[in-house]
Image (cartoon, rainbow over all chains, first blue to last red; front, top):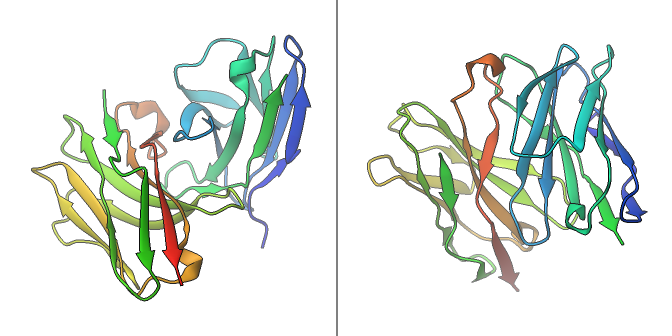
Amino acid sequence: DAGVTQSPTHLIKTRGQQVTLRCSPKSGHDTVSWYQQALGQGPQFIFQYYEEEERQRGNFPDRFSGHQYPNYSSELNVNALLLGDSALYLCASSFFNEGGYTFGSGTRLTVV
Amino acid sequence: AQTVTQSQPEMSVQEAETVTLSCTYDTSESDYYLFWYKQPPSRQMILVIRQEAYKQQNATENRFSVNFQKAAKSFSLKISDSQLGDAAMYFCAYRDSTDRNAGNNRKLIWGLGTSLAVNP
């Protein structure tokens, strides 16, 4: 079953560094959304990509950027890391014109 | 702005018993979707059940059912015959419908979650 694959599973970075997280969507899905889940919180929407364009964006600073490739895979980039960026980053894929999301198991980012 | 509130940080239930998790939300929209997701220690969000606001009938999926009260903006989840594998974080989520550019894939707005323990 080609579900949503996220890499890496865990990551430790130093404050001020840059990080790239990767997501491969479920086979056939063309849309990727990214969420940040801080410890003890519900997920917060970062942005969504479709047709290699950012279609929706949540209330996150420009330090958070993304990309979608022609094969629908996606990257989340965070620059100038802050301690507060420590969280679980979840990727969800779907068809653009349907509402069903499939989530990955996330990347646990720790900023020290 | 839409908000989702889960007022029970932790709940526990005996195996084979029934438990109800509460969720309230706030919106000015008339057409929207509501979801319950389960997040086990594996961290993957798993869809438990979804409800379409224009449908009056409460959604049911095997042992899981909802009590959807649109006027009260309440959306509770009932788990019957609880099993040890039901232990997890449960999140209530609302699908935002304010951005028409995003087709049907509008962002999800989440509650803080309820941690459910199942006692043998």
